[in-house]
Image (cartoon, rainbow, N blue to C red):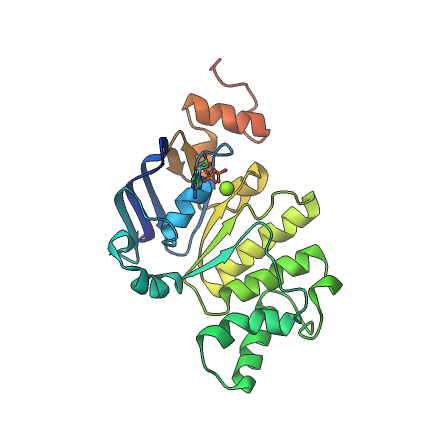
Length: 254
Ligand SMILES: Nc1ncnc2c1ncn2[C@@H]1O[C@H](COP(=O)(O)OP(=O)(O)O)[C@@H](O)[C@H]1O
Ligand SMILES: [Mg+2]
């Protein structure tokens, strides 16, 4: 499978805080790559490099084969068009209808007739299982619907890659299942490549094509979920064991 994003030997420090220490990761085209790892280990910093919000001190970030670390800020506008981003608190504009929320990037970036915008917004909402809510306001929607509207907005410009930073953190189990379903729907229906930062191990192992664990500035393991779940690397075993979804025996005694 070809990689749509390849991170190669990336280092990043903030002052004397050496966060990324030679990160290598491949995101395969059309796949769901889930990045796991302890809080503060640099997961968000890593994905900010992928969309060019941060520049590496060393290393390469290939997006569609193009090293974006070498690109000027002006070119980054085009790079970022390849990405849709859904943050933990997929904030919608409360004073705007669902329609205006989802249409926002279109109105900002493309000059299209109103009729065309309306068709695009409805089509995207429908693909994500939302019907007839265009005139509603965010406060009238359930949490799960708001997430979907956030995703509709993040994908309205047809990005090739969608990044979700901790989309499940702070949600109850039913909402988590909704979000998992939404990520799978986006992959299937919108044919996007997905990068998910998550602490939810159960859904990680269900939906991931690849799991990558970041630890102390490096990707310790990356591979199919079963391979990572059965990893012999002590830190990985411990992380998964503590999450309650790994091999039943505690690490260290095998
Ligand atoms: N813009 C920034 N300036 C300085 N330090 C930062 C910045 N962004 C992140 N960091 C530091 O980088 C480390 C990793 O942060 P982050 O990527 O947010 O962790 P997480 O894995 O929880 O997403 C933390 O020590 C954080 O304080
Ligand atoms: Mg983070």
